[in-house]
Structure formats: structure tokens, C-alpha cells
Image (cartoon, rainbow, N blue to C red; front, side, top):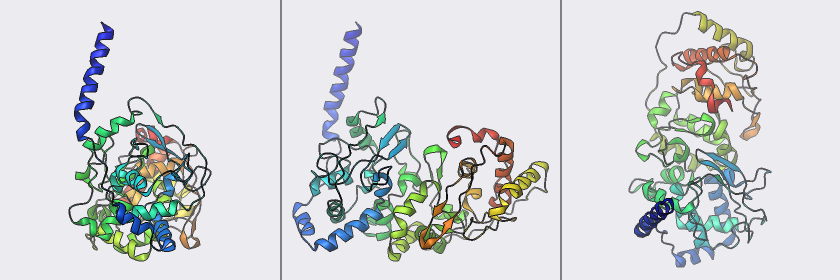
Length: 417
């Protein structure tokens, strides 16, 4: 009887698969004639263009190996469904993409389909790259084919059943639309750089239970691994945190602004990508995100505590362990630590990023133009839980216009890793 039940279940599943095959997402059209023209053009200019596009698309951040070999793969990427590794995209014939044609490369980038016909997992942001221009994909292909081949096999994914069944991604792709740009936006360079090449929604837009983007809530903020928050990039969200267009341009290019420095999951974006973009493209991204202007922002006028005991304890802890770098009044110190008075983290309603930094610290980070911000230590073993909570609440109230609602319960879970 049990065998019959399993057999019936298998037949039903097979019938569903067979019935829905015609509706599985199809490969995008690829113009071979146009590709021949592109790939036979000025090779040096094409390769240089491909190098710039690889930078704009931030390919190194995921495809660099843990030992630093560019494009050799192996970097573990944590997802809610298990660990996926960045793949080898050097032109090695066996381990990399040496056997790919330009069309194969385009379908991998734009459709998430490997040369062997298997689906790529959407940790590869093909949902965003879906609208990449074919000539840009061809330029990326030309550049990658000039790289040194690395014979390094791709590690197996750490996904459990049923997430390790790639064929199920056919249904994921049906449900989770790949169309990010509104009609007519594809020709807007800022939209193209932000939505497609930069794939900014992949972090800054919330996701549904299947891991797809909630496009109706674009740029309203998303939760990344270890409880880190990618904050809202909507004009209103940026304005609430005091951003100006010039601040945003400086942040993308140099990694430092009055609102803080690029840290956590955003630092690799600066390190491998945005610092190398030309000024015109930086301005286009800023203009697209802000609409050129931002709503005026005023600090919260809510009453601050008149030094109740908890607020005083938080102030005492701040003076003891933070003021030496960030200044007695949170004014910061150039080349050492950013100001707290204008910093984004205390202004976020969700305290996760602030708590993450307090618990885990920040390594010494090198920014463009020779700028260095010194290491911030972890306070997880230095301060008690109550001291950490009092410190976070003090900073949120004093400089963020946020209530003192953080409790010790917020220190557990992913943040503590």
C-alpha cells in the first residue's frame, strides 16, 4: 500500500511537471549577427569596455576565490536556504567558462541558464541582469576570455532537499518576475546602472518567502545574512537619514560621507565596484535613486531623556569605550572614526546594524585616496548585555531620534555570530 501511495505521488508530480513544461521561462533571444559585429570590432576597446562592465556589475565580489584569485570562484554565499558558492568564471575549459560561446554567456547572465541547460541559483542575480544589453554581455564575455584560466572545480552547494533540485527553479522563475524596469526605463542610464548592472534591489528590496524580490516594495530595505539590514534607498528613506545628493555621490565614489563609512556587506561593493565608476555614471545612479532632489529632512524634535538612570549609564559607557575615537559629543575624528551625530545606524528604526557593529566590531578598512579608518573592536566580550543595550539606546536617542526600546533580547540570534 505504501508503495502504491509513493507511485501515485510520483505520477501526479510527473503529470504536473509535464503539463507545465510549456510555461517554463524561455531563453531570451540572442542576435548572432549583432554578436559577430560586436566581437569583431576593435578588440582592445571591447575588452576595456568589458572590464569596466564587470566592475559596474560587481562580478568580483562573488566570483573571487577566498584566497584572492579573481574570478576563480569558491566564495561561500550564505542564503536562507543553505550555502551557495560563487563559481569559477575563468576561461578554463573544464572548471570555468572556457567552453562557453558568447550566446552561452548571455543566457547564463540574462536567463540564469548554464551551458549544460541547468538552472543557476538566483544568488547569481540574473533576475536583475535579465535586462542586460546583449552588447554589454558580449563585452563582458570578451574580457573574461582574456583572463588566466584557473583549473579549480566549483564546490558543491550546501542546499538540502528540495532546494538542491535545480529543475524546481523553473517554477521559481515563473513566479518571481525578472522584469524590474518600468516600461521605457531601459534607456535611462541611471536606471540601467542601478537596476541591472548594479543589481541594487537584490539587497535593498525585501524578499518573499521563496526568496524572490517584492517589487511592489522596491528599495524599501532588505534583511541580509547575520541580521544585517540593507536600509531603504527610496528618496524618503534617504532623506530621513539626512542624505543629500552630494553625500550619496561621495559615498558611492569614496565610501565616506557624514552618514558613515561603507562597512559590513556594502564595503565589497565599494572595494570592487563603485569606486572605479566614472563620475558620469556615479551621478546617473545618484540621480536615479534621488530623482535629483531629496525631500528636506529635519532631526527629530522629540524630547530627549533628562538623564534618567539608563540614559546616564549609556552615556557613561559611550565616554568609556567610544569617545576616544568618535569624540565626546559624537563629532568623530578625521582619518580615525566617523561622526555619530550624523551617522545612519542610530537613525534606523531597526537597531540591527548598530547592534551588529557593537557586538562584532569592524576591521580596519582602506578607502580610496589613501583614506583609512582604524579597526573598531568587538564589545561582545568587553561589555555586559545591559551595558550594550544602554549604549545602543543612548546613541539612538541622542543622535538618531529613535526611542530607547532596545532590549537584551535583540542581542541574540544571527546578530551574535
